[in-house]
Image (cartoon, rainbow, N blue to C red):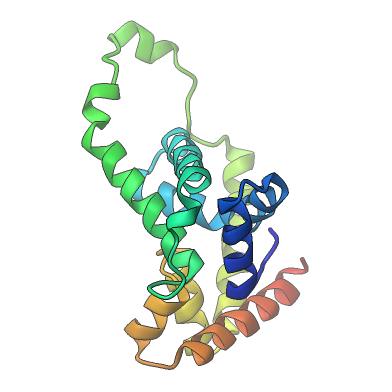
Length: 184
């Protein structure tokens, strides 16, 4: 995942509004993992989250000129597009559900991980928990709000009642520590 600053995102959105495909690709590479996480958290289904993310980026391509850098940061604007698309998706989700008879349900492969996958996932979760435990309370809380709850830096700053720069520093330093601890 390419991490860019707000100013770089603003420049990319400006270029996208002029039809710059490479800028769109760079923007997508930079923010799509985070936006996918937001969609997945809301929709709980990877396939739906992918559809919503694709729809959201079509909207970004078509509406980039409507981005107003004064009223919100680029990530907030993009996250709101994804959230709105996910909410719209949920409103009509009942229409997308296909009723399966019992025979078809029995033929579907299990989505449950096999024992080896469970062990690997458990080990990874324990390592991550151990590494999160090494962070300061502020870093841990900021990272959890950002990556598990999908909040923007600004939203985290308001929730924790600390300056935006402080919140960003906690997240940046915490991620650096996690990366070192996990050996990434």
